Image 1 (cartoon, helix red, strand yellow):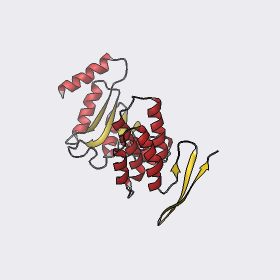
Image 2 (tube, helix red, strand yellow):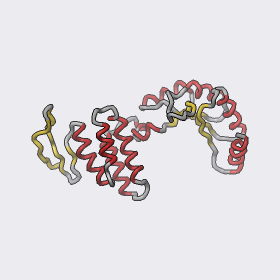
Image 3 (cartoon, helix red, strand yellow):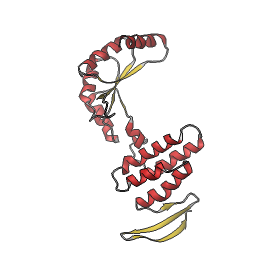
Image 4 (cartoon, helix red, strand yellow):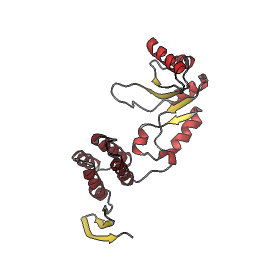
Length: 223
């Protein structure tokens, strides 16, 4: 830990850009404030607290303890950023109101809803197709396994509890490239959602979904 303190101090006094630190809760929790005050003395410009302890079993072991963010804000002079417990837009303001933090950091929720800071929740297939187009526009930016992971997060965020979700996971895992993923989204995922197939050539396939199956498929030109 002494070496870490020295590194932070050296960075903050050597660089012309601000140096910040992100922490989790210490064990025991009371040591978090002690560590943060030491880092403040070493010259950090702000501190982000992800108010959970490190868990060997799970990355997110229970809800974040935002009372610890509030306590840290009341203790430090440098800005404090709160991280944790944000699932939707209203959670951001609630976090501000409770902790008094200078900012709110959102991590994993952004993987499922990258539009959270606009206060909107996009259609999961729409945002998936948009992401795939970015992957095509900037080839090599993300590996295919990374692309699959992002698509899984988009669908899981809104549909993870749907009875067909495990079928989606299996179908996604069997895809070999971006084209396969796009086709799976346009056909299988839309069918599982009870929605019409999406075509990529300006045509939309409409289907009547009934309890007994799918009937009356027709193509309508989109103007």
